[in-house]
Length: 267
Ligand SMILES: Nc1ncnc2c1ncn2[C@@H]1O[C@H](COP(=O)(O)OP(=O)(O)O)[C@@H](O)[C@H]1O
Ligand SMILES: CC(=O)N[C@@H](CCC(=O)OP(=O)(O)O)C(=O)O
Image 1 (cartoon, rainbow, N blue to C red):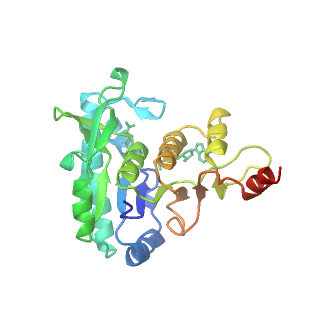
Image 2: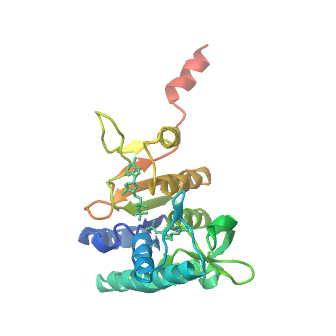
């Protein structure tokens, strides 16, 4: 059942620089389609806190190696400063936001992703009940990317992955990933920002190294979402106008070309 049309992932890279039109476009969307679900990260802020505490920051394939102290830092930032900061800003912009994390209501149930990563969770199940309850009452849920396992241990979860999992669980039609660049960029002499891309084009750009670093978990989450019912994923710049109204790179599945079908039937 398709209930709510949009999940928005707000990246830590842009949270401090969200354009005022982000809030206005959210308001317009609320009027036409009802409340969205916002999932946010906070990677740069976690790194800053780790540095201040004298902790090491290390990433493997875009994931933060998270020891006991690292988990505390991630929780303080994600469920603390960033979640409360974003919720308060939404509220000040006239939007009815409620902050929570993937631990609350066991929204994001996880298992350890890889022992070498420490407290990094891989989502095994989404329990969206708490989101449905909030959405039905008109609230905008603002979700920090943390998870919990069956024994009640808490984990750090990549926010792109968390947003993709939430979009699938809500049967969302659309996932918008708001970040610090205007979508996927090609390389070389004809380098440009792509207005649209298909999953196979995206896969090719990952293989040839055009898409790298923080863009990899984004496109992974995008492709997983498209494979399980999300119709379109948009990657857009949250520091510029239009992020929630058409700007950025739109990733959609290839449509069977009608010409190819009629050509076959002519034979
Ligand atoms: N082909 C690409 N097109 C655009 N950005 C890319 C590409 N490959 C890697 N990136 C990087 O991905 C970054 C966005 O990911 P990330 O820093 O993790 O942001 P967020 O905090 O929003 O998740 C961009 O700032 C850019 O440096
Ligand atoms: C496991 C893992 O890497 N978790 C991420 C969670 C925050 C995140 O994903 O923030 P962005 O959206 O800003 O990238 C981290 O610790 O940085």
